[in-house]
Length: 267
Image (cartoon, rainbow, N blue to C red; front, side, top):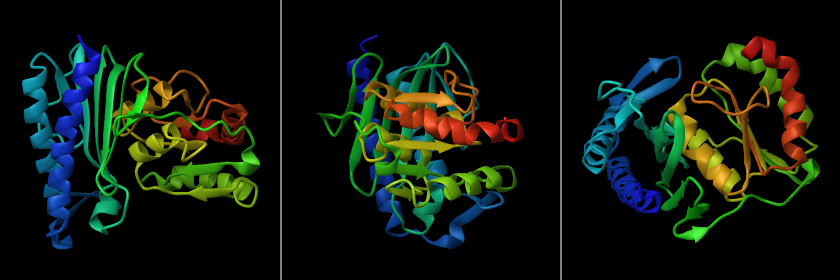
């Protein structure tokens, strides 16, 4: 398989999804929102974007299966598999707040080969293929070189599992607020990973997320020279749900050390 060519084609498809999101945002009404779980929202926009992506990706690689967030197609795990989040950052989208994006990964036996993330508000396409480095709108990107947590811009996010995650989140805020350069909450795991890859964040972490949230972004971070692990500081696997992504410096270890005491209550 020509991964560079495939990544280019997936970027085109992701752009079509992003254009649909942009168009629908202009006429979107909150009365079209459904609540899947507490504070976990979905609308026809998520579902219709997913259908568009599935149709285009099926034509691109007919032998591949699908794992999607909105279940508009039956999950079918094959050796090659598309892992799709049609709208990562749905709450942001609902409130007309950046960022939100389309996230597409192609995996082979649960290992990412291609990752494409298209951020709608800034018209930014992040992409990578295995062994091919990472790009933003056609230009090479790389993680930051900062090694000092006191100078770090740190990304944190808020999973829906608030009761389980709140003690750790409070701990991280308590230890990092006033120590790091600053802290940001993006509201999109996929975009936070891209921000690490592009050097906008030095490190980011979140728990209780799904493969469609992180599979594309994790590859982009790694190809940009970064490091991605689970909360136990081991290799991030397909069925993990807790992630640390960094610029591959001592900062990664410092964040892991803060998380470590809370692992038994999360894993």
